[in-house]
Structure formats: structure tokens, C-alpha cells
Length: 335
Image 1 (cartoon, rainbow, N blue to C red):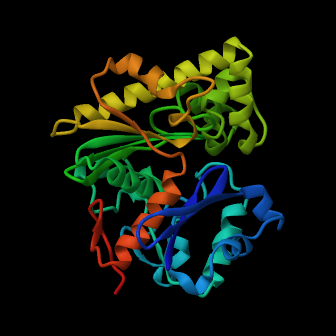
Image 2 (cartoon, rainbow, N blue to C red):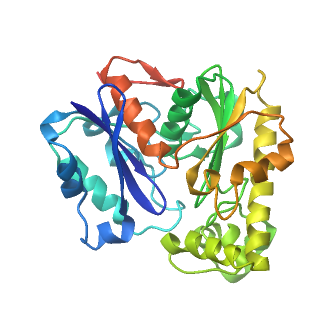
């Protein structure tokens, strides 16, 4: 018997298959473009690896997750748990097609919410400050971090196409800083004054600004989202000065954001968890070493798998199946 977790990521949709003892049996990823164009099927990829009759429960993340604030059965969630697909980065349709396939499977599933103003599990100050703080897979990432470390007071830094940092206090998510607000990722980043002027004066879409505000803007890289990270890292390897400036700037902004969350944690921060394709990187630079230049060994640093979103979702599925009533302070409502 197994559990399945799904991470609706920026460049692709990842799945984790986990035994009922908590062992990761397999992790695989489906590209958004390939899914949209019918070149790959989520159903086929899952059934290659596991008999659907053996799946006890599947946990799904989808887009912003701002239409729900509890963990709920998928068949009881309206509009796939989102208020709108707009303003969420580049839309390819690949994630939507995968979701449609999962809905048609004869497998029990739950949906994980994002972190937003209507998340009554969050600190009221974060809810007052920001309409949206993190999409739903960040919850599963944080849960995997909790399970991996055993810490109760820590910060998760998920650095990949976008950067989102999450504060966990007393084992519950207190708040987070979303990609459009603080630190740069590879592709996405905060909207600053120059971009606001471009939106107002030149009619540029805010979502387009957000989708080109990451490290790639500094490096002068454009193209398909799925290819931008590889191009940035390749340029960095070759000694390209703009690529190095881009990576160094990204790391600085992440350090600033982590330090800001430390300030508002009422308890002593036990450590920082690093994840994501950049946060877990060891080549062509070691992200852990680079960010520790700012922290000067102030915090213990723990690197977890870049697939932590899918793994954490599978862990949530397993724990909800076994009767857990809350995850990181978020209510489980499967009645």
C-alpha cells in the first residue's frame, strides 16, 4: 500500500510515491509543456510505477491554493481551490491538464491550501500585511522540512524559479514572504519602482514584470521558463560576469529575507532549511556555503531534497490517512 504526493511546481509537476512505512519509493517529474501537448500522461506515468488499487490517499497541490484554507477532499473543493489563475506567473496549461487526469482517477485525494489572507491558521499580522504569502506546495515543503529536522522553530528557504521563505514557530506556520514581495528567484522576483512605472506608463502587464524580475533579468536571459535556470548556470560556469552578479544578488536577497523572518520570530530560531533546485545546489556554486557567508554560522543549516514539495505532500497524505487533524497549524477537514 502506498501514498502519493504531487507538487505543482513552476517548471513541472513532480510526484512522490511513498510506502506506508514512510519510505520514498520513487520521485518523478512531468514537464508542463509535455503534459499540455499530450506528449506525456500523468496517469500512465503513475500506473507504470504503482497499482492504483494500492494507493491509500493522494495529496495534491495546485497553483496559488487561495480558494481554500483547510486540507480538504478534492471532490469537495470548488474551482480547484483557487480564486483566479491570473497573476501567478506564466500559464502554460500543463498543470491544469495533469489536475484533470488526477481528478478522473479512482483514487481518494485531498488538496493542500496555500497561505493567504483567509488562512486563519497564520499570524494575524502576516494576514493583515499580505493578501498572499505562498502557494500550496510551500506547505508540503515546510512539512517535509519539519519531518526531516524535528525542529519546531525554523525558517524554510525554497529557492528555485521563485524564492519563498516560510517561518515556522512552535511547529506551526506563522507566515511567509511570497516571490513577488521579497527575494529573487531564478525567474520571478519582486516588482520594484522601475517596473511599476513600466506598468503605468507603457502598459506592460504586471504579471510579465513579475515573470522576468528574477536573476535572469540581471543576467540578460530570456526564453522558456523550463530552460532559464540551466542557461543561467551554464553562463555562470563559463565565468560570465552578468550571470555571477545575478546569482550573487539572488543570494543576498534571500539572506535579507531570512534575516527579516528571524526578527519576527518570538522564539529562538533553531536553524534554516534550504531546498529547491537552487537552494540545494552544490554545483557550480554551493548555495549553503554562499548564504552562510552572510550568516557567519549563526544558524545550523540543513539542506533537504529539491523534491521536498512532492515528498512532503506524500507525508501529509500518509499522516492525514492515519488520523492527523492538523498540519503545521492548518486544519484537516475530511468529514
